[in-house]
Image (cartoon, rainbow, N blue to C red):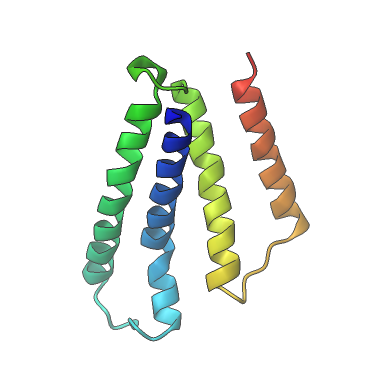
Length: 123
C-alpha cells in the first residue's frame, strides 16, 4: 500500500514541479506576466510552487525507501520519479501548449525510459 502512496505523492510532486518550471512560459503566452515582469518575481512564484513540490517529493522518497520500510530502492525511486516526470510533462505540453506536438522520436525516447523502469526493477 505504501508503494501506491509513494507513487501518488510522486505524481502530485511532479505536477507542481512542471508548473514551477514551465508554468511561467504559459503565463507569458496568456499575457498574465510580460517580458517586463522582473525575473525575480517569476523565480519567487516558481519557488512557491517548488515548496509545494517538495512537501510531496520528500515524504514520497522517505515513505517509499526500503530502508524506511518502503517498497523501493533508491534507484527504483529515482527511475519511477523520472518516468512520472516525463508523463506529466508530456500531458502538460499537449494540454497547455497547443503549438507543441509530440513526434515519433519523443515516443521512442519515452519507450526507452519505460524499458529503464523494467531493467531497474529486474531482480
